[in-house]
Length: 460
Image 1 (cartoon, rainbow, N blue to C red):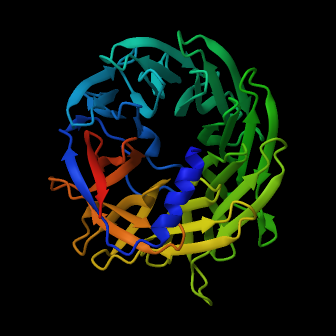
Image 2: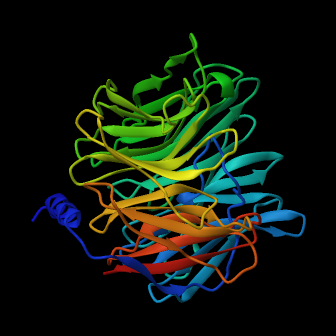
């Protein structure tokens, strides 16, 4: 039976499930070197969800960086389904100065590809390394930069096993531009590179990447100054890197286009991309989610989410992640807050994939939490799971997740995944293990020296 039909049937079955569910933690990994260093709430960039990936055998890979004297080196760790640490790999650039791993993807052979930033010749580079999944040995590495530097932010593997990396390239006097580079998966040979810069002396920052079943590449992010930025979404021909179309989203508020930051991207079964992020609205920030025709770039629909009560003047909503189910319906999660006291709450919305109409919305109601927010999202046969952080009355941060019915938005369970540490911790990523279980990446909230992986399954 078609897997999308199976998933759709499972989602419908969940709607009638009356029994309580709860996640059961199977194990917590040993302390793993490195962290993301992306503490706090960032309005204009994805949080940390690119730092973890899984392979077909159920292994998990997590990347980050750690101090090494006055320098910084990146770290890559592989953990198997039993929680055993199989290997760790590190990278110190040629100048042993500042190297940061930001994203990982795994190919069909179980070999991880990592991208990030590395110093060389006084400039930062987009550094991409492919490791052997068997032992962590280096298979190939490539560097790419503009005239004054570059940095990698996300990586994907296409159906042929080739590697696509996005990041920024800095040009002299023109600011940062998008950089999208494709490497041959077998040996790292560069197949093509494409840039995008809409306005000179302003910042164009790609944040998310997706590849469709034909190998076409979609990239989204923000273009323009912080106060006057646009969602900028681009489709590239996967074979040649030729730009197929560019779509901008920047609705006017108070008579002008203001700040709009695209942060995540998913592609549905028809090859149509869906983009979400933060967008200025009449009452501060809204979720903004836009679906485009994959062939032409024409906007199919745009949906906005403003959770503030009627009459409220200032209310902030910031979308962080998007996912698509077997029916091509769309789910978005992030945080919502009254900006005067920043009482953040996890906010999750389901939209019809056909026309963008809102199906349901859910705001977290954790009785012990003083504030919480989500930035990781998985939609599968177990429901809609969102994860992030929550704080208690003492102000300590805890990794936290909530599951909802995909049909009604009813809450199925909540869980706090305490970490044996006096430090604040938060979920950095949430990924399916492929066997019905899930991996959580756990990061120290204020440091960048260590992170952990937890594996759990959902039990009735």
